[in-house]
Image (cartoon, rainbow, N blue to C red; front, side, top):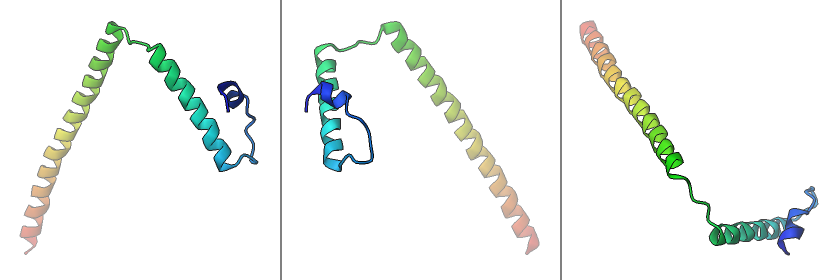
Length: 87
């Protein structure tokens, strides 16, 4: 199957598993060939923005994790003190 045929296949319930696999392989091969022949490079400014955004997400999640661990420690101490007082 060629790429243009794969793009124009009508999607219906009558497609077999083998036909779907053939269509997906054809589309993947074409996309991979396009990407290898004409790679799109990310501009450096966009790359830096992405790195900063990911670092901010990491920092926020790390702070939330640390707060949760500290809170867990406090709650555990209180539960243990209450349990010991009951004995």
